[in-house]
Image (cartoon, rainbow over all chains, first blue to last red):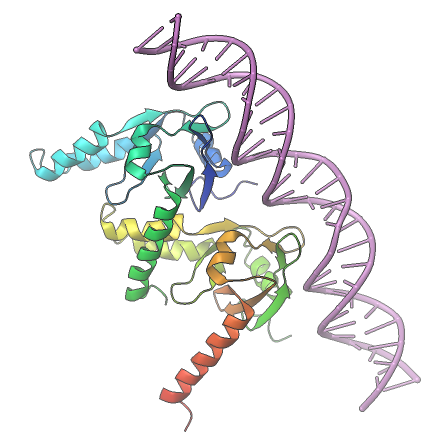
Length: 149
Length: 149
DNA sequence: TGGGACAATTTGGGCGTCAATGGGATTAAG
DNA sequence: CTTAATCCCATTGACGCCCAAATTGTCCCA
């Protein structure tokens, strides 16, 4: 069942085990392997308390964006601080699990469970209740301006 | 038959079985297969406690809207959170049934029965009594400001 | 107009497969 | 030498696939 052409979509929440590991949903792993992604680039989301994870290409895209900015601007400085200083590389274990490090835990507030949320080119790690809350807020914002046609 | 146009019309309510499955009405399945839709894109309605279901084209429509935004803005982040992270992809089983997951159950309040409501390009899942109530309310609203009297 | 047979849907379960999870063993790191 | 990360295997449970029963709807003919 090749769910969807190589993009991260939908969401799922899995449990963190006693060793601090959590399974990445099989659908997401399928996307990773279809793009031959071994090294995962992780960094903090700019707006939400979530960790973004994607392939090295994701970092490259940010760097391209960075080049468009005035290198001495506060915005460029801030961005580099996040994507270079704040980013880390990870890989999955043989079972397709990742370690929930302190880096992840403190920024997201994750404890016993992790919600994986697809974002097309990358996916996110959320604390489940934070994810729900953010979604409800977003839906309300969008509903107000009326996306329904 | 006169109802063969490729649009989702009218409504029907079916029972959820012990495994949490429910048959999609044959008329809706006919529309899906006439458009060769295999993957179903599902998301929460912005105004009502209902789940909207359509083909990938439905997602594409939202993404087109996303492209008009600055990809690093809060606005874009919020929209992606909903349409990518908030949407679920599903497929029907070999009998044309779908699973009533927690995602669907909690947002709609569905328990033993599901009302399928056609919405032209997509269809909806409702809790039967909520559907009746919403219809009555809508009818009353329209009557007050509109066609009758 | 009212059966009644036939066809299509809807519904109910059994079963196999695969993903998620847990725990012990092995290896790397400090 | 101690601790932590990784690997490997076993268990569990969910989901997809198949087949069968029951229900509903449709059409034809008396």
